[in-house]
Length: 68
Image (tube, rainbow, N blue to C red; front, side, top):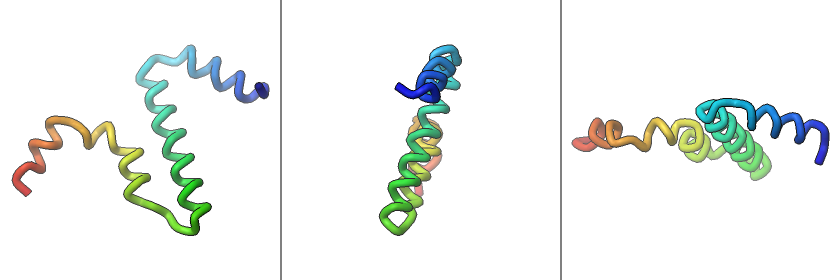
């Protein structure tokens, strides 16, 4: 394991759970973005779902969009 990987793991372990979730969301976002770039296009829907999924996937959002 590289020194960078070890440092990242230690920082993540010491962070509060909401920060850990945000780091995970951002990492998945970055990986998705790199994959899309490698395929020659950006899949903006996948990026949006990754970034905003926790906000979109709520009962309140479902209710707000129910009649549209």
